[in-house]
Image 1 (tube, rainbow, N blue to C red):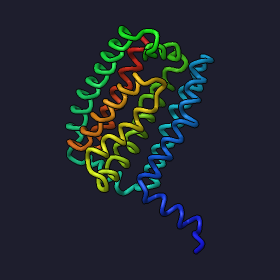
Image 2 (image 1 turned 135 degrees about the vertical axis):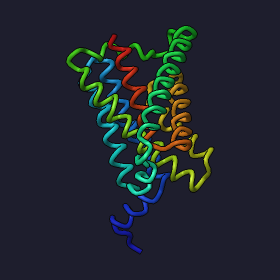
Image 3 (image 1 turned 45 degrees about the horizontal axis):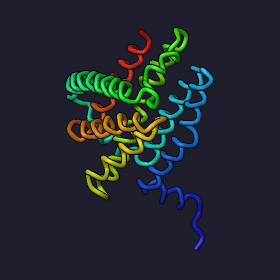
Image 4 (image 1 turned 90 degrees about the vertical axis):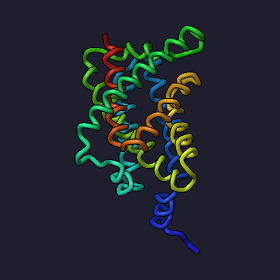
Length: 221
């Protein structure tokens, strides 16, 4: 039996496994090499473009595979104040947690760990607005819609909550350069997944944006 392209695409859209693999391939083949090149060649524009591209790819891929399911995790009516308060408080907490672990790893293994402070050189005055938009907002929204919006919910329906939390956080954590930063991002991914389940996706998005913006402001100081 001949399978048409439309039928094949439809099957892929219904497979969280395929989407997870597609995200992983994008991260390993496109995102990480672009960020590594930007850091090694001191090219801020390329680094922030890589973050913008990642956010856009994750956002539209999540919307393509299951826009209705993702939208159902965004109940905004009557929850604006709660989303803002919880998002700000947890976002500041995530930022503080990242800095704490960053300092711990930096003191224990200074020759192996790539500190977040090494990104400070990419935050020039000319690129600050780009950093806020690409790294602070667009990337956070895209990541949350894909990892906590689509992957977490769809895998949870098929394999259970624990497996869904681990897989979504695992792929999220792999989007970095070294195993120690992976641990930080993996734990943050678990927390944002639990935050989504306890409240909603919009709260996780708000928390992620606050944490990213706080980190950008800290690095630019």
